[in-house]
Image 1 (cartoon, one colour):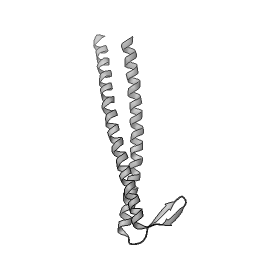
Image 2 (tube, rainbow, N blue to C red):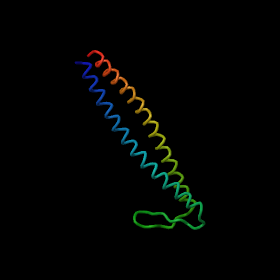
Image 3 (cartoon, rainbow, N blue to C red):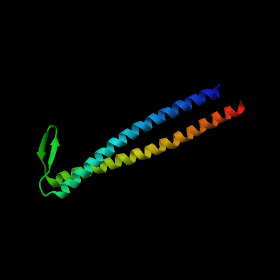
Length: 115
């Protein structure tokens, strides 16, 4: 009975990990989308000699090219950092989930052999 309870707890833990991984994947996708937009904006700023415009709330305001470029580069660095952090956390959870899944499968196989 105790092993069955442990197995159910592990299955529940595995399900929670999988949900967490799905949420992380969604969050990572949002960061990657924002990163692409930021990189695209940086490229556009590099191609033009004109002062760029920046959207603040519902209005567009002319902005200093160098200042905006610096802001976008900082945003890009921050997004890269968040993506890397999420990828590392994702890998840790994946490895832990894999161990639990292997343990559950061994228990199931053992029960099947006993029958």
